Image (cartoon, rainbow, N blue to C red; front, side, top):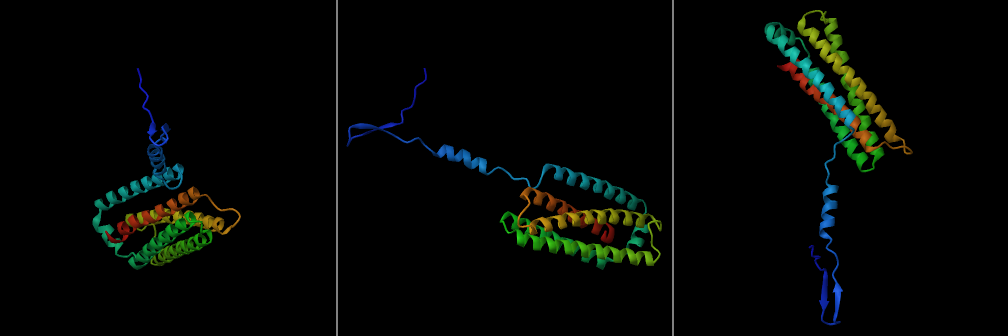
Length: 218
């Protein structure tokens, strides 16, 4: 037999029994738990794409390391002809671009779409600067007679940096799209869309952070 717990109380002044209010702490606790659910930036599909791209580059990196282990002298000798200054400047440019993208996403979350558009513009300019550096570097190599068929190291150099440059070009298209939609006062993007696009650009940055020391320094 179930016994109901009484929520009433006796008031001596009136001689009547007064109903006590229901406790509200438990209800608010449940709602608080729901409001603190973890937030995953962007969309699931974009994260699948990002993980797939990073896995593909991981395989490329492993193949490169295996080839270098087979002929360390050739790789070390060829590496000395790379322009570390351009590589370092491009690294700084991409890091700055990621910082601008982070600021842009925060501005969108705060409703400052005009400010976000300015940061996306700066990130896009960084992308142009990076591509300009790669064109300059490729020009130096070709002028010196260094091509993808010169040796194994330069074959990997052109392939890896070329694929990465293609990703940068796609990322610049994404940044141009974000710049356009945040400038349009009548049609602002959803935060999930902005986060998804930003995640792709951060992936491009992370890949170069691994690629730069792998090709230029180690």
